[in-house]
Length: 236
Image (cartoon, rainbow, N blue to C red; front, side, top):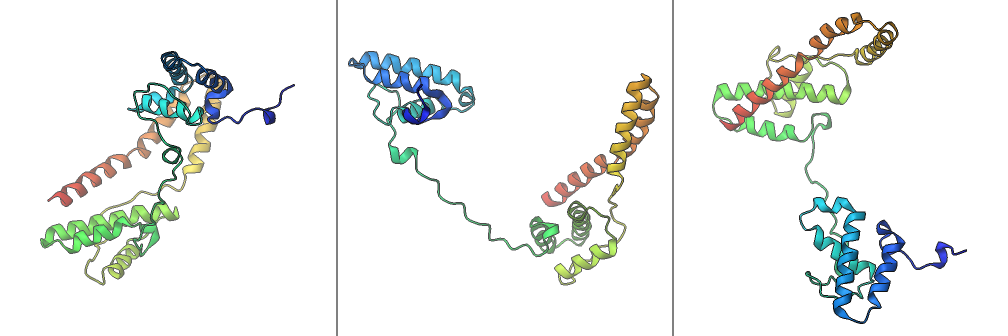
């Protein structure tokens, strides 16, 4: 019995051992034209075994690079692409730098600083007030997404006043953010209704769920209006 520990190491395991054996056999062929023809057939087989590469624009170049790796960079054929070097193929990418942006209040996110700067730079008083109200609405959404609990307008007003040193004052009641703390309860209730409907084979439960879905879907249009209004003010 032959164990994998006694076999040659698979240079690219995704293509399997049979492809590596084909490459080894192809490299032993003395005629260069024949080797090239065998290499092209192996490349087509590799494309079949790894169809995800076809999404890439230069997937043929990638397949030839893989073929060179499987041959341990000893492949000597007429390739349509230059032979890659070992250092080029196994070079590690440069480390990504850490972001240097300091977030004053994490649950509001780093985009809040850009929004505040945009509002402070606005000279038109009406646009500045509108931007302030939209920033307050954005702070409400961020707070709810972070803490999963409703927030009062007084807190948003105080937070914005502290962040801007009193230069921006949020007016209460500008926008309302709907917070549904019954999400888990509604999902469990819908599951029970669905199970009861399957048992009874009746449509009454579905008719009862439609008004609830319509009520919960009302906030989507408000969010779209807010986003469109915000874009209009920023582009002005």
